[in-house]
Amino acid sequence: GRKELARNGIVEPDYNRDVAADFPDMLKIVEEKVKPERDRCQREIRRRRWWQYAERAPRLYSAISGMERVLVRSRIANLNSIVFVKTDQVFAERLVVFPFYICCHLSLLQSSVHTEWLTKYAASMRTDILYSPTDCFETFPFPKQIELLTVCGTQYHDHRQSIMLSRQEGLTKTYNRFHKKEEKSSDIVELRRLHVEMDYAVAAAYGWTDLELGHGFHETKQGVRYTVNEAARVEILDRLLELNFQRHDEEVKKGLAEVKKDKPKTKTKKAGAAKTLSMDFG
Image (cartoon, rainbow, N blue to C red; front, side):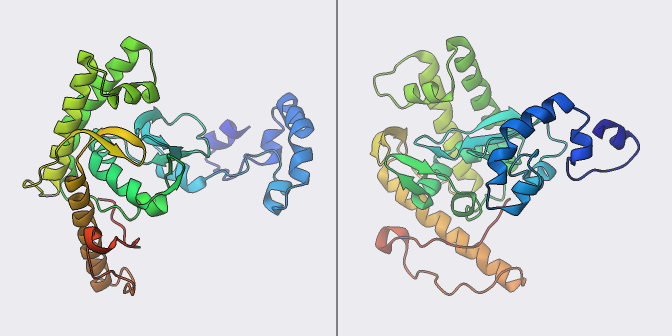
């Protein structure tokens, strides 16, 4: 079987049928229930390898190889909720998987700074946000000092975990409480305090120590949210966009990117920010 191949130093990039045949009862079930559907599929690779997952995502599993946990979020949701999960599983297509395992990345991606960016550039479906890595993540400029966010991210993560364990509730219910103005339970109030602290730490990591975020219950396209105020939202988007173009210009000078022809000449609050192509993973 595959384990024997691995012991002998043979790397098998695809789970071929000979190896799959080591489990004849399981293969028979797949052949009876999956193969008829795959035979009708227009994609030749799916018809030919009918016993495999339709999309194996080899680049994903290569990227997270050796990590015990990674950050994920739902691709379609009206809340930005990022969580660590173990890597010893097959990830569903509806998940966005981030190859990060340290809490500094949780701080950044869960922060209001990233939330405002993705809300601006993601596609939407009613009140849901369709998180596209191309639009929401690859264009999002990371701060230079991201490692400074580890402590606040760890505190935020641990407290949020304790809330979910003690209440036996998942992320969605936890954040529904978080954004509900009438919810005044001490554990939720503390989570809000930690979120504010985390947002200011993220702003400081960008060097934005002058930024007043004005946290409170504010109306958004997704309804009332405990988040930064409108003035802070606009300023965050302006500064991120400016940083995005700055990073892109640096890449152009190094020959790592092409010259961008559609760079807007005005900021978000004046004319609306255009989607960019530059990327920086920190």
